[in-house]
Amino acid sequence: MSSQPFTLKWGILATGGIAKTFTKDLLIDPSTRNVTDIRHEVVAAASSSSTSRAQDFLTDVGAPSSAKAYGSYANLAADKNVDIIYIATPHSHHYQNARLCLEAGKHVLCEKPFTVNAEQTKILIDIARKRKLFLMEAVWTRFFPLAREVMQFVGEGRLGEVKRVWADLSFWNDVEKEFGTGHRMVNLDLAGGALLDLGVYSLTWVFQILYHLQPLPRTPPIVSSTMTKYAPTGCDSQTTVLLTFPSSGAHAIASTSLHISSVPSPSHPSATPAPVRIQGTLGELTIASPIYRPTSYTLIPASNAKRGKLADFEYATKEFEVEGGGHGMFYEADECARCVRDGKGESEVCPLEESLEVMRVMDGVRGAGALVYPGGLESVEFPLEV
Ligand SMILES: NC(=O)c1ccc[n+]([C@@H]2O[C@H](COP(=O)([O-])OP(=O)(O)OC[C@H]3O[C@@H](n4cnc5c(N)ncnc54)[C@H](OP(=O)(O)O)[C@@H]3O)[C@@H](O)[C@H]2O)c1
Image (cartoon, rainbow, N blue to C red; front, side, top):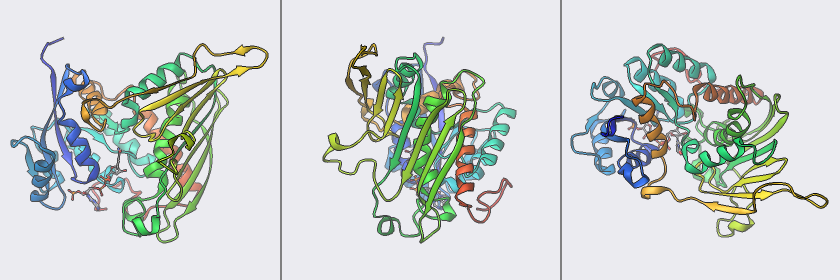
């Protein structure tokens, strides 16, 4: 392998909240997290509203002065200097934006949820495979050192047979006051709602443990669900998904809400139940909040009055620090760089087939709850103004 790090040249599509966080992380020197084989360069950003908004964004995040600002997403997609595009628009627009970039021959990292429905995700996957481009849903959680360690622990069978996973991501919002009807979290025109925005993280933990760790070929879950709507707009405000994984018989409960919180009182963390519980025959592994940016887990060995301790591990809590003073979005970016460098079309940690399966589950849950997004949001037509 060359001693020179591989450089991945990024274009940033959209200039909102998460685009800013992600791009700032890209600009952190990878050596601060002991990464020396790859590096990132921010070479361009685009805003759908104006070039000056894109320029302000680049200045704000501290991008190099050579980075180009575009006032249209199409111009960014056409920039020959860009290798990969990070899509950070509301999910209503992911299909159109990601397809624009793939059709222009760019690798793509697309924010979660991948698209509005599974049919759209499948088309993006087909295009990427046909054109030999890298594509990944930006499920950054999967790349945290904690997530890698938990996956290894469970994968080695240390918890015994995993029989059940609970996962919740709920925000205690005064949702009417905070979001009203226009905010993307609740706006149907932006594919708002708890399931697609937050519930996807609950499903991520369920899928990592009960789907990803299955021997191949993996068997998808049997799903039932219940959903409550947010009256002012009709999106879902509370959704609970019950999953059975037929190959192991394991159950999962994935929940999300805009009205209650996974962390009801941040000043009393010890009184907060763990939002992720992975329950095995030899004990339990719990993950503390926030589950999308996980930095603490606890091992609880099972014991039996007659047989004593069953597990080969002790009760312990392990804390992680996000390195380099960043938010932790660089871990997924590093994966993109390594995959592109190695000519891989997808990540083994966040495989396309798994993103598609999660989208299928969410389609089924929305179907059962009669949650349909309006206009062309569910369409696969391209190009389409949404
Ligand atoms: N990974 C995470 O932790 C995380 C956290 C938050 C959000 N997300 C995901 O990231 C995506 C964006 O979320 P965000 O919080 O960054 O949203 P945001 O702050 O509202 O930013 C979205 C950006 O998209 C662009 N955009 C294009 N068409 C738009 C339209 N019709 N309405 C509104 N914005 C439009 C705008 O940028 P221009 O004007 O420059 O084009 C806007 O600034 C969502 O899919 C969300 O689920 C992920």
